Length: 251
Length: 211
Image 1 (cartoon, each protein chain N blue to C red):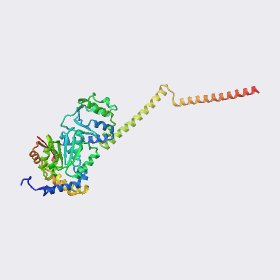
Image 2: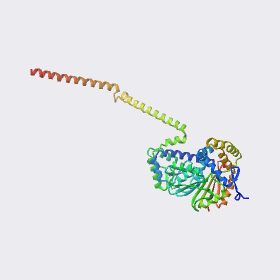
Image 3: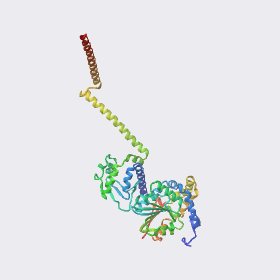
Image 4: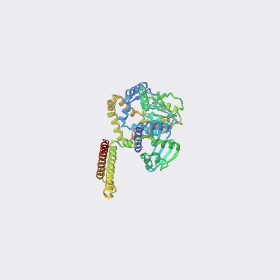
């Protein structure tokens, strides 16, 4: 059976029915939404800000563009994009999880970013936008939680304008054995304890660590993007491959 | 890649420090909002500093790379840019003085006005960037220099006074002047008393001649 045809999806290291994955991922993010930003800073030592900033810089975003930030969560990328595209542009923050969307909306409102931002609760596999609509689409630390990643990539390709750019920022595989062992120890021993301590939910953070290991590696994701009819697909490793930024263009 | 990450970290730090400062200056924020959507590129010719500035209503966004074309490019040596920030009268120090402008010159002129009029504590920016310890040390140096300067000024004043009074004999010393003023006061009192006595005697003489 090919991965496209199977009825189950991975939920961390477990195999669960596809419908159940959606629900269980939703539970994870409902649980961590309020403490999401604090945990991100703590887990990555603040480095997630650098990864996101580099993504923005390489997006080529400028005034007047239409940008979609999928799985935008608490709006880190949306805020910066909204400031760059200005009043003539538009940024859409989409997230499947309403708790995350609410936290993101409140945070952006507090920062005075409201005029050129739309908030949409949407599933990345079937995006509710017209064809050829966005100049740039980003999905940062979101793709691994999507049940059918191929469908999501095809859906993103559909709503991109020809010449538009898809950027996938996601945890990936390190090629340095030493870094890998340190990273594994951190992910499975320290991270869940931090999650328990700060967000009161160790299981959710154990899932995050497992889902990172189950996510396709750099080359696999690149070929998945090519299979979704994107061209000029390439990736750039950050922090020794802990995170990779994949980009592809709609022909 | 590590260099890029490091540069990004510096850009992020500079950007958040600048925005913290700008948050306290609503007039400048209003001016920046009018330039929203524009891209200003800075290239320092004698240092590896090259970045793009995106003004927006809440401050500025800084980027070390930008895939499009900037609206205006400001290029010049580091000293010209630092002179611009440290000068009291920024407009006097700005463009045309070592900093070359290409692209939208009107945008450059508007940006020049914002910098000139901004009520921004650039030293505070240094404190934010360097941390409290370095800033405290810097403040100590500045304060002790200031104290030393005031001692020097005072001693210079004393020396000049002494030279004029004792060496050149152009001016009298303080006690001499005081003594002279006392003498003048005494004479004035004596004259007043004499005047009063004279008035009294005149009155007595006129009374006796009537009787």
